[in-house]
Amino acid sequence: MQFAKKKLDEKLGRKTMKAATSRPFWKRQEITVPFSAALLLGASAPLAFAWENPLEKRYTSAPLEVCDQGAFFVGGVPKVTNYASSSTAGPPQQITIGQSYVQFQIPVERRKWPLIMIHGSTHTGAALDATPDGKEGWYSYAVRNNLATFIVDQPGRGRSGFDQSVLLEAKGKGDWNMIPSSFGRITDNGAWTTWFGHLIPAGSDITTGKLIRHSDPGDPDAAEDPNEPSEKHGDYLPAFPIPPVKNSADPNIVTREGAIGPAPNPKNNKYLALEYYKQLVPNGEVTLPGSFCEKCNPQTLNAIDTWLPNALADLLEGLGGGIVSPHSQSTSSVFHMVRVLKERGKLDLIKGIIIPEGAGTNLEASGLKGKDFDTIPFLLVNGDYRPLATRQINYAAVDAMNASKTRKVGPALALNVEDPRFKGKLNGHTHMGMLGSTALREFDFFLEWAGDNIKNPMLKKSCQFKED
Image (cartoon, rainbow, N blue to C red; front, side):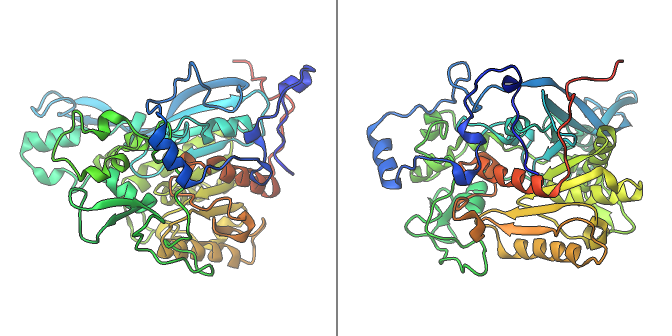
């Protein structure tokens, strides 16, 4: 059954224009400007680099019909500390740590099972809101397609907060071993070289070398083997808002106004000033304690696989079930969520798992086996430029799921955007594909797959709630 796009306007007898972005990617008409022409446009025509003003230009493809929206927290525990707000020890005070912020929207007409989306490393739920060049993001697009949608900020990140008392206590006691040995963070140039392009020549840094995009002259990657997709790629650019396009760079940043530290090679200015970089934040969950898992390998779990799995399990229990969609780092946490729900005897609450760019899909690390996914429709899609080793880990997890002789739903899938079924429409879809120009094309595929594999009927009275 396909995900229907039923409109309230139709019920009221009004005529509406179907937004182009609501059509499957293989039916859309798009205008493509050749790269050479784009360069000429960038050189000859002024570009508005400031963010798009939503009072003047709509981010979404059409108005949304929402019957409820809001936010709440799940998970977390109290902690009593003498260092709640100062490195000087004070009286015992309680703070709450490990909680997870959740924002949501519920459309006027919705399907039974909601969609829960979780961001990856160095990001927050903002990654699902809108694209850096002012276009519709997955959050509103999911709501537009009749899905009650919940966006999670991982514990220790964004609006969920982190535990500053650890740092204050370390300073107060002079015990620097209490401070995490590292704060994970994807740097601006690190995001560039991991997802969008390269730094050449090898061994250089941003002050001495030059940043280039995938497929620019000097690209060190050889052509990709079509039979073995990997970080190598075809002759195409990343499908991401990179200058010269609106919202891609602030000229004040490009010219180093107000910059701190030494200036990089001036040739790198425009690639070190993507609007997207403003989303990147430290992985504050390292201030939270880890845990022990007897069935996992390794048995010592880091903070992100300790707090987020329990918060997600609590959220699913509270919602009565749903479809879960992690990105990158949060994939391992969702596998641990599966373990937690298995231990609670509530695997039936997981109505499906859809993963764009999975990482950490190692079943053994989560204390799981392929048969634990017997009732869970499962889809994972690797974006372009994805390392071969990561893809192979994903393949192995899916193979283990499909090897179960008691699987009760369709086969688990691990696909690559290079797959012939996409007809090249997702070429250049980066690790941060939800923020790129191919974002809605990929989400259309998720909708189609879910329509065929997840039983998710439309509710007749979706905006009517129980009386308090």
